[in-house]
Length: 225
Image (cartoon, rainbow, N blue to C red; front, side, top):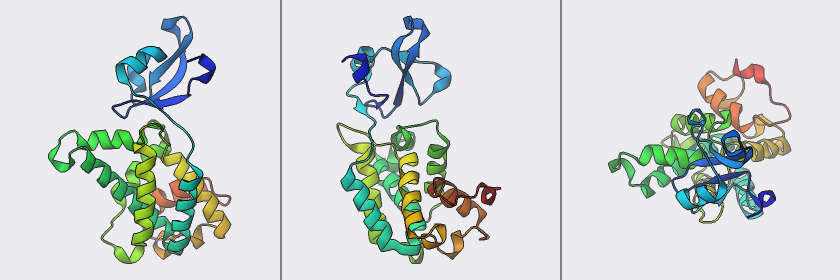
């Protein structure tokens, strides 16, 4: 494949993310760097990566149909949209982990974590997304829309499980949710009373508002301090 056609990011068969860069050891030629562990400074030429770690999936934007499904789910959830999304991430993680052997498989947790954030594994959004799914509690059924959570979880699974493409989850989800929230009137319209900016659940506000509304027009970083 010509250099100009190489995708900037790909995900390999073991759900590791790779970023296209210039490698000094290869004379400045384009190479993919293992983005799941920058400290390792592991680089492979595109053809070597395809041979050793393929099949590779390019990281691409979400399909329009997926965006429409998310927006419909958020609309249905109303002020429960933020908590519903947090629960959906938790549900998606649990489903993906089952595909890797579940609790009985020692490697399943780490593989699933890699799979969920392979689009940009080193980003703060990816870190926050993983923390979000740990914080969410699907037993608090009164705080979320179960049908909407199922829809969102299914979309997220599709993003990271498709055979020929991969959609980055954390930053993409935050961008889409922030846009939707602004269209509804801002954060108060998509989050319940326990997740408002002055709520006592500071961790919940940090994880939901801090990620899902990070691209919102009225985002206030001071809320997170």
